[in-house]
Length: 162
Image (cartoon, rainbow, N blue to C red; front, top):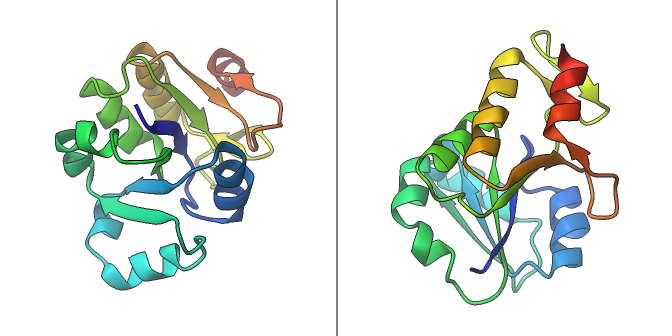
């Protein structure tokens, strides 16, 4: 198992993930699971531009991530799997690939439909349901903006939503 970090963050590859998480965990490669981004080479170039030169990134659809999970999880080095939203991670969880894995909830920002539960996490009831399904199919879901930050359990987030 070389995939070390499973993170939901709508910004995907950005400074907090690359520097804050990536450098701290020694991430050598990223797997970005996003159906639209997997089909757009020019957007992939933009997202990959901020990575250190030796760090690799692969953009895959949700279906490809499920089909290729064992291969992606056995690449050399340490990896991080990122999704933009809860729905993609829920699909991965329900396929069984997240069994024995823990999911980190990062930046889900304010919209008119979302309610604030942390400064960096805003959720709808649907997203809360996705997170509960992910938790049921994994070893848990917690929110934490950076590795040294306070870890918040899913139940505390959902309690704050109600």
